[in-house]
Structure formats: C-alpha cells, structure tokens
Image (cartoon, rainbow, N blue to C red; front, side, top):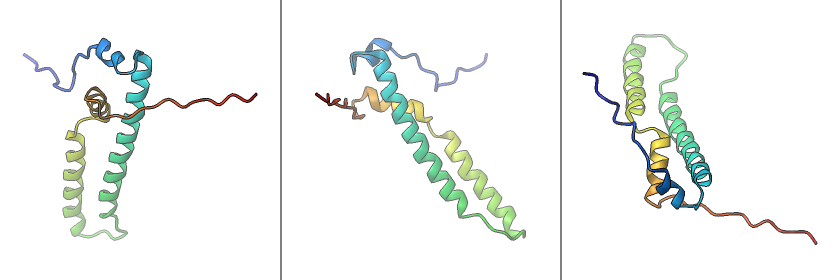
Length: 105
C-alpha cells in the first residue's frame, strides 16, 4: 500500500479566515509570506552553491559536486515555503496590517 505524503495536510478554512475575517485576505497574507521565505531560502542556497563556482575543471570538482548535491538535497528536504507560511500564520507569528488610504479633499 502506498504511503501518503505527510506534507499534504487538510486545513480548516474557517480557522484560516478567522485570523483576518476573510479567507481571501488570509490567503493573500500567507502567499506574501511564502514568497518572502522562498526568496530567502533561494538566496541562501545560491550563496552556498556559489562557493563552489570555479572556472577550472579538475579532480577536485568531483568532490565539490558531491558537496553541492548534498547541499541541494538538504534544501529539497526542508519544508516548503507555503507550509512554513501557513504554520507561522496560524500560530500568530505573521504580522499584517492594512494601509490607510488618504483622501484628497
């Protein structure tokens, strides 16, 4: 029997909507936070992989490739940005505010 991916979780939309009073606003806040987390993780990964960049082909490159693969696998095993953003939001760790529009009279 095939096992179910543990990253797939059923979420209660009423609880998500309760944070802002509107499900779509909550999803908007979560998606913005997910983009922030994703961007940060991508930058970290690129910085780590940039350390291995060299213009010379040699035997050391084989060992560097193994290290690059291990670093990449580590990031692949990390929770996805969307899941992390939802968890932060539900735990009240995400700050969101509304901009006040000024009316010109």
